[in-house]
Length: 241
Image: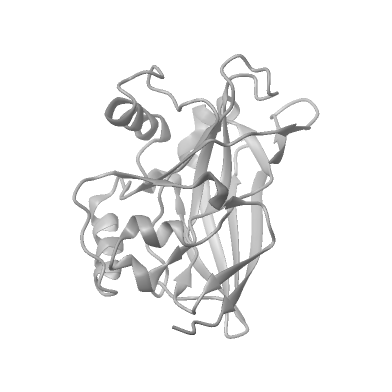
């Protein structure tokens, strides 16, 4: 998968990233009241409360796509804007310098199946991600000032779907360390495994979770005056049985 790495200084460069492990972190809110609102909107759809906070779901690495369009089974899926982190080879030979890189993506999820099993519902849909990444070290000192935002085109109208500071979610270094501790036995020194990516969670949708024809997402850095953006169309496939 080709990514353009954009450091805060110097020229961007394109690298070929091999993804072997995809982790979708859920229930990652720092603000328990806001997280409770998201849990309640999912409960209204018949989705059970999580058994732990946070939760680390594993999905196939083939779910990640940079496509500008995805196909979904039926009309009950929806997107969620999230930051996500990538780690390449530790020796830096893949061009990622052995460092963490951050992008923006959508944890697009099949809602009709989510009540039966969250992991299955997440596996059913592609996860569109931005083709451009930022070096985390360039934004770490002002991470809490970054903004996540999404718009959705619903019945021909473009609406603000989600918006808020990344402070709504657990700090990514704590989230990553939790995964390494609980699932890797600390083998990565509190970091991500090599050739992996992790979605960082999301917050409640404005007006409630609902399907859309198009989903637009953005991670804004007001300090450096730049944004990571991506958008994709959703084609609904018929369900014949």
